[in-house]
Image 1: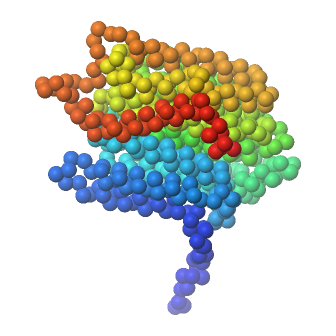
Image 2 (image 1 turned 90 degrees about the vertical axis):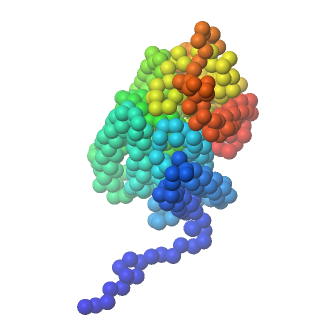
Image 3 (image 1 turned 45 degrees about the vertical axis):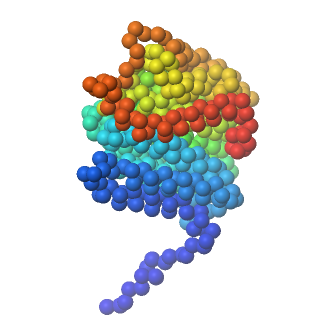
Amino acid sequence: MENVDLKTMLPLVPLSSDEWSRLLPFLILTIGAVVSLLFIPFKTKLSKTASVGPFAVAILSLVASIFVLFYQPTEIYSLFSRELVFDSTSRFLSLAILICTLGCVLISFGYDEQEELPAELYALFLFASIGMLAMVSTQSLMMMFIGVECMSFSVYVMVAMRRSSRFSSEASIKYFILGGIASAIMLYGIAIIFGTTGTFQLTDIFQRVSAGYTLSPLFYVGVGLLLISLLFKVGAVPVHAWVPDVYQGAANNVTAFMMSAVKLASISILAKIMLVVVFPVGVSSLFYYPLWIIAALTLLVGNIMAMMQNDVKRIMAYSSIAHTGYLLVGLLVAAKSGQGIQSVYFYLIMYVFLNIGMMAACISLSAPKVRQLPLSQLQNLFFDRPWTSIIMIIPLLAMAGIPLTSGFMGKVALFSMAVHGGELSLTLVALLGSVISAVFYIRIFILMFEKNSSSINTSTNTSSGVSAQNLILHKNSALLFTVGLGITLLTLYLGIFPGALWTWIS
């Protein structure tokens, strides 16, 4: 029998130091996720929680990855036959994703014990981040799919981790089944695109489409299937029905993660597909009017349904759908005109950080093992818990587009870009949606100052007069307040001096 030469069968190309440095954030997050899992078996009777070690590892891994990314060069660099492409855009989006994840990890500590969330939660934060970094750092449809699945499977499990609530299990099953169908549609669309173009590379597909090559009608079928799956991931109408149930059923920190980092990564790859495949510069697209209708319906349905809700998390879920509509307006204009994507990213970055601030406030108000946060619970909040109300009020006013907040500057940038791009009618629809949204945002704002005969009470008092919930939240109150106050100050700063973020994006 002949000797088998493994080097011949599996030729491995050694990576240079530059290539290793580009992969370093992926390696740090992977090692951090594995190490955090190794801490879990060391839970003892002397320690009621096993989350301290995984939490610390997750924080260190994210901070180290952010540090490495911040000092990475911005010139274009590709690896593995262009499966991973690193440039200034991927660096910027990767930093934003990791900062969002860091914020979600910070607000999770203490709250995970309150909701009896397993310590594996922190490893899943890191695994999901790896998938999201792959999503924004690739020009390959196949690598994009792998990144989406790495992110999605992590989030499926995170939604189900609230095992004390049957609503969490129900939400996870809904999300898993519908997400699996969306993934199958995505993979089928990618297969059709590959079959008609002979490549997975977006740059090659762009060259073929923009150069006027005669493409099979099946190519447009594949692009349509890919768009449907991505619209599901971002929660656009008519594939949005999962959003309210999943956001409400999941624990608040997981909802914050889905509304920030997951939303950011999903919108980013949708932008990439629309700019490169759907609307190559100078090429008209048969997808224009369907996407126009989807954008208009998404922002109107989201805002109208949010106005009809009486639960804070369901309001935020439908608000998330509405903001997806605003972003689709910007993406449609940017893809059609080939310019203005900076306005979309400005609005996107502003919005995802506001969500973390809102959910930090919701965590501080949530009762153990209760999925609902009714609006009635916010009555008299400003007088009973003024600091909590402040870190909720500022993000609310920003989402409503009140001047001197980042939300106002984001909408000005987005709507101005849409008008200059020739989309006056769609801009008017978006303005109508903003007026509707102001109703339910300001409704929450007014409730906080509305006096009630019974002061707000978020938990059941014990005989000693101190609630068990407050004892648990005390461990995390400093982190919650720090994250919430930081986002509040950032919101006000960007509302007055938006040039700092705009320069970084540009």
